[in-house]
Length: 64
Image (cartoon, rainbow, N blue to C red; front, top):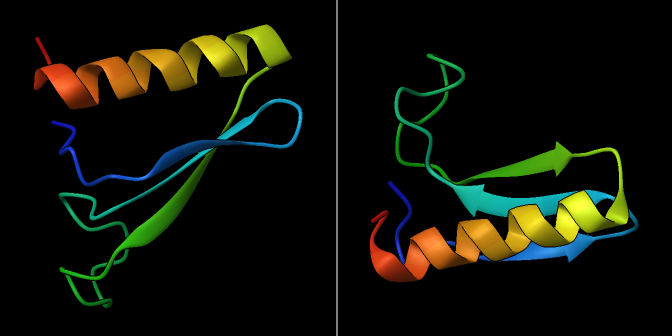
């Protein structure tokens, strides 16, 4: 589920960055409500553009 408030942006040539609160938590020792930056690396600039566009599309449509 992607909330409207999740910031998603292209970083560099082939990376997409987003900050979210993972559920379940990545680190069980860390606070469960602490936002975590996630960097998603793909092979090409085109794939990064497509991923960013698709994530933003799902964010706006509520995943439908």
